[in-house]
Each structure stands twice: as structure tokens, then as C-alpha cells.
Length: 440
Image 1 (spheres, one colour):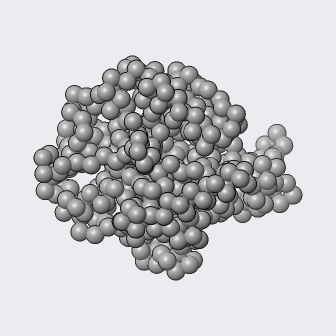
Image 2 (cartoon, one colour):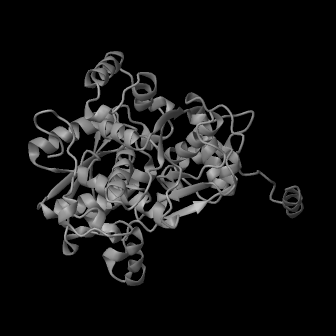
Image 3 (tube, rainbow, N blue to C red):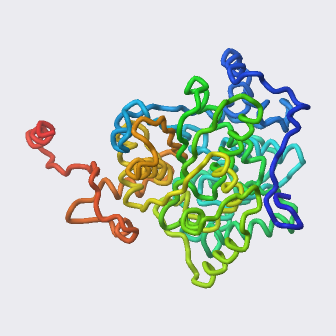
């Protein structure tokens, strides 16, 4: 069960902190750097297990997730208009399946085994299915069924689910349709659901923020900027900081910026344009219900090249409202042109990311231009997935010329490629090749 049978709201994981051992300082976690031969201490999720204390050590399913890095990027900082030492990229593409989802899936898989699940399922635009499939193949404790929408999954991601042995069902519809169906199937058949409606998945995703703080020598940044799709990360980050402050492990909470793709901007519309707020948990449910009713009436579908956040019905909407409240947050939208331009800058700075990831950098640039983020702020942008998750958009962007733009890019409003770095066609002649090289 992932939601309340009476009100339909998603369940949350809460702890009796007075009944579990809690560190007196975040620096206590540093001692595990010397015991990394222990698999759960090696994990970038479970080495912080006192902050997600729902499993015993011998129950944990881990594949070495969370070996990610926070990298300062002077070139991306300049692009965003920030001081050169002020922008950091948290690169979650280094996880085993290539995306941030492994942080949550290790926790969800652990809980699935704890409750004796024999089958687990998810709806996916790609990354969730890849992550769940790899944990199933390693754990050998449960089988996996994946629901995907028609034509709505990048081949790089689909290939992972297929290779890791997941049974894949392609639904005629988009991600929102697939998620609706998988929730019904899991309820009716007693299958363990691993989408971010699962509160234990969000517990694992809290660890991304623990590693950010660890990398900053436990100093709290001014801003966390994250792409907004199903809003699991946003919700998890808010919960992480809320709990750390409650436990006295940090003295302040960073601000949170959630960045929607313009073609999938439900949160932006409801939060920034319609003024929905958490309001102590008493948010205006009728307002969001009316919004979705009108969306259905007009048959509005999400449409963006950033496939990982191509979601119109974010299931963690209410938890994201809480996170925005906790973190004094803002929401913005960026179009696909801004996303791909930012992606090219991230790549030129040495870290390749999938399109959805670059929404965070595009959002930071936008917020700096608006004066919301200051040039001297310390800003962490979350890069959620590896570049090779969705290489088609990358190749199309870099192959574009002034005379020719890829049809798919143009259909999404991407009409220029100012940072393109396409291959140069040259004759098979030594002198011609050298001539081209000398012209660089």
C-alpha cells in the first residue's frame, strides 16, 4: 500500500527519532570512509543508514549505488552568470544504472524483500525501469514487470530493462497512463510498486543531499536546483533537510528551485501561476483537481525532449508543496532550447548528462537573470542521469547547422544550436586532414 485508503494521499515514512540511534554530528559518518570494504558502508545511501533507519544491516540490498560526485564547474558557472567558484554539479549519472533512481531503488528493493514481495512493478520513462531491473537481477528475490508508454522511452534506457531481464509491457499512452495502470494492477494483484509513490524509495533519495553536504565539508549551500518530473527528488530533498534541521544536524536549510520543462509544467502552473501552497498540509485540493479535470477535458499531454521529466501528473505533487514550504522554494519552467543549450555547456565542462538533467542548469541561469539567485550564491545543480541514457538528442543538437535543424528538435521549438560541435566532413587525404586540424 502506497496511499491512504480513505483520502488517497500518499503515505510518508516517519521515525520515532528518540527510539533510534542518531549521530550527534554529520561528521560521524566520516568514520565509514575507512570501512568501505563493508558493502553497506561502501554504499553512498546506506552509509547514512541512521538517517533512514527502517532496515537491519543484514536486510539491505545494495549494488554499490551512490558513488557519485559533486564537481565545481567554473565554465557552467560563467554560463549561468554566477561566480566561478559558486556552481556545483551533483552528478548522479555515475550510479550503476546511470541515474539517480538507484538511490531510491536500493531502499525500495530492500523493503520489498523485507515484506516478502515476489513480483515488483513500475511505470517508467526509462530510468526507473532500468534501476528496478538491475536490482531485481542482482537480488534474485523478486521478478519485475515494467510498464512504458508508446514511443515514450529512450532506447538507451529500454535496453537496460530488457538486458536485466525485466518483462516490459508497452501501453498505448504516455507515462501518466502507464502509471495509472500499474497502480491499479499492483493494487489488484498484490504486486510491490516501485514508483516514487513508494515512500521507501524517497527515503533512499534523501541520501543525495547527504552526499552533497558531505562534499561541501558539511556546509549548507544557498540553493539546490533540481529538475521536476514526478517530483520524487524534490520531495525527498525537502524531507531530508526538514529532518536534519529537526535533529539539530544542520543550522539552516537551503532554498530549493524545482525546474519544469515548459512542455510538462504542471507544478509551475499550479504553484507560480495559481498560487497553490502547502499551507500546513491544508492545501487547496479542489484547485489541483479542477486543473487536472481541465487537462483531461483538453487532452493535454506532456511534450518535451527531456523525456525523463515528460510527466503532466506528478504523483508527489503534495509532498513537493511541502518541500517548497520547508525550503522557501520557487518553481520555474524552461523550454527545450534552454535545456539543450545548457546540456551542451555541461558537456563542454566535462560531465555528460541526459537532457532532463540540464533543466537544473537552465533553471539556475534563468533564476540568476531574474535576480532570484545572486552571483555570489553557492548553487548545487542536480544532474540526474548519464549522457548515454538519451544520446539521440545530443547527436541531433551537435549535428545541427544554420541550414539544417533536426526535424524532431524543430518540432520542440529548438531552432538553433549555438554550442553545436558536430563532426567535420573531410576528404580522405592527408593534406586536407592536416589543413582542417590546423584551422582549429
